[in-house]
Amino acid sequence: MKKKSTRTGANVTAADPAADRAGHPPELRWSDRPWTRSYGPGVPADLVLPKGSLVDLMDGSVRRYGSKTALEFFGARTSYRELGTLISRAAAGLQKLGVKAGDRVALVMPNCPQHIVAFHAALRLGAVVVEHNPLYTDRELRHQFEDHGAVVAIVWDKAVERVRQLPADVGLRSIVSVELIPEMPLLQRLALRLPVPAARKARAALSVGKERRKGAPAPAARPVLPWRELLDAGELKRRHPRPAAQDLAVLQYTSGTTGEPKAAMLSHANLQANAAQGRAWVPGLKDGRETVYAVLPMFHAYGLTLCMTFALSIGAKLVLFPKFDVDLVLKALKKSPATFLPAVPPIYDRIAAAASERGIGLESIRFSISGAMNLPAATVETWEKATGGYLIEGYGLTETSPIAIGNPFGPSRKPGTVGVPFPLTDIRVVDPKNTALDVAPGEEGELLIRGPQVFRGYWNRPDETEEALLDGGWFRTGDIVSVDNDYFVTIRDRIKELIITGGFNVSPSEVEDVIATFPGVADVSVVGLPRPGGGEDVVAAVVPVPGTTLDPDALLAFARKHLTAYKVPRRVVVLDSLPRSLIGKVLRREIRDTLVAGR
Image (tube, rainbow, N blue to C red; front, side, top):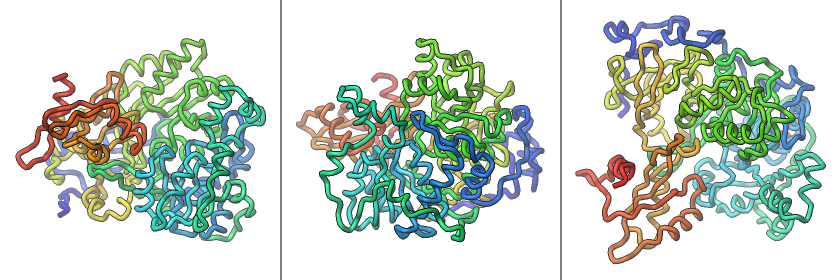
């Protein structure tokens, strides 16, 4: 049963001694929130959020920045006006396929112009976008498609075959196949046709190839439509239903404590609010004049908001990378220098090292924000020395669209913490066993978040939604934190046993379910071991069936067939037994501590 909070109004954390003694004030103005004193220069304590939906946001950017470059892909540029036309044509094509308000449209693509166009085309019809990692295995895709029931999938041609193999009962009617190479400049397309190994390798990484495309007939009940034909329906008629701010916009899958990922329901208002909060956090940005690098995948909540929604809301040039490739990034820097770079620590480390080796300057990058994993102090020092700009850490979850807390871009920041709440964002630190009880100042407790970016709940999971969202709109993050006297938040531990590797969340239970089916495995536990540069490695502790010998390499090969690469364990440790509690629960923490200690 859901516990009822005894707190009302706009609460501050229990790190406020006065509030702890007398209870939270019934209502505080945003300018009275104590953490706003630590905001960077020019960051407002209060914020007027834009009205309307993401459709209105996109229309506004097209009007204001029409002739400016919206997208750049391997040097090929698309203006905001051209982007608006492509969105309208794609929306008309989806409408012709029968997509209507409330339908789910699945996107299975890397970063590319079609991803942006398809995303906003679906929203224009009032449909709900469902983002997918294009490298997911058949098993992973099947679970998600069974869950959301998308009627149309827009899919990178290299992933089309996997989507076509989905069973008929998932409800998918049509597939639109997207090729990346036609979006590249002519000279690069010609270079990819050269009969040399380098060109063949690059071509294979970008496309499935004509031979394979021709060789597999599509099932009659599930046709495959080329992207260019989707655009042949003309532009969408002006009079059509438009989504409202509170309508559902995106289903974003996130790993949980259960073995199966669940979809966070994000509204137009959630995503637009988070983009506006991000804009307010960096007042030094100049609308219509910035260049943002999309090295983060847009099928991830971090990349979705910080790259797509945020960048397009300020009229930035968004430089798209299908995947992070340090050579492509350094090449792009010469022609379109980045000014704002959201990323994860390993990306900053690799760019800084490669740029230093090749004598390429990074001074154009004035603002950088890191998330999804711990930001080492050494990374900050190296990056800021190379760029002369700021690199700060932010905190959030898929359920918060995703950013809720950030270090200020200014002298008030505190390295080692994740910062203070964003404008219009409240936090509390509570006893995990009794969320109505705020912990004493400086003590550790579970972080609760409330704000306009907090999601609407989990798709088709009312019980888990009720558990996650408390009375008053407070979201239980599952993270154990402490808050200092200046209201800076430090992450101490996680209640949820997620593993964070390369900025992605991995559910140990999901990996365990796969490994448990390998012949000869009697028991398994998957844990995350800390990596020197930040983040974690996925490691499997396995107990073999008595009398058998396990081959770790064979087990890992088996895992690669059923799991996306980042979920596959980096190594396998064979144990005689796994420690368990009195009720039989595997003690992952004990296993992790044992492996960290090298025992």
